[in-house]
Amino acid sequence: MTILFSFLIIFSGYGIQCELIRQCTCDEIRHCRERMLSLVKPCADKCQRYANKVEANYEMLKNCFLQNEEKLSQTINCTQNIFHNACATKPGYYVQKIYFESLEIAGLAEINRVLGDYARTIQPLIAIGRRFLRCARDCIDRSSKYCYDHLKCGLNLPSNSEIIQKSKHCAIINGFDNIAIQQICFCAASAGISDEARLNWYFPEGEINLRCGAVVPISKSELS
Image (tube, rainbow, N blue to C red):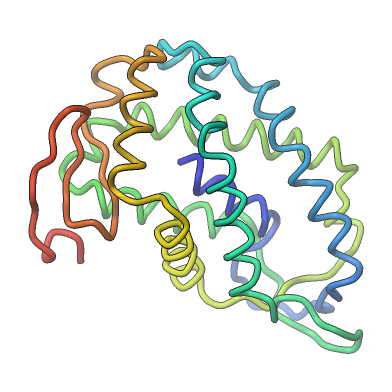
């Protein structure tokens, strides 16, 4: 969920709708994007009350992800490079206006798809994750003085499905493999996440089902 959150920050405010809007130039969004990314940590801290809802120590849980901060940064850079044509090098182009909510919904649908039958078991955790995401996103929007909204422009992005799949690819090649995800799982467990919240952790491309402490092979058909 945290990795997905980082991707959503990059494309915050966007999701497909049929309406044309001026395409943002790379120069005008660069400062705004950097500002928003710099607000992720302080805004996450302001929303730490949601960690209490999963019986977790927030500082310990945050450290689980700070240990992977370099991987997260590399993953975000990879994603930005893949979608380098999202912004225009010069003004005068138009793209479809898009909204954040549709990308959020697509991301959650992918999480549910990967979890399969276990999705129902951890729906309370997913629901809390969504509330945390919205809290942090609102904080970032306010703290950045709604910089994207004031630009009144959009990005040239592919379908939500393609964004998610390519972002997952970036995560994998930058170190978020099965071992890394299992380490995060153990770390989150040590931070106090309740048993029912940490029943099963899946890694999409890895062909294994990760339960904290167990690795069980599953078939490719279960991942498709």
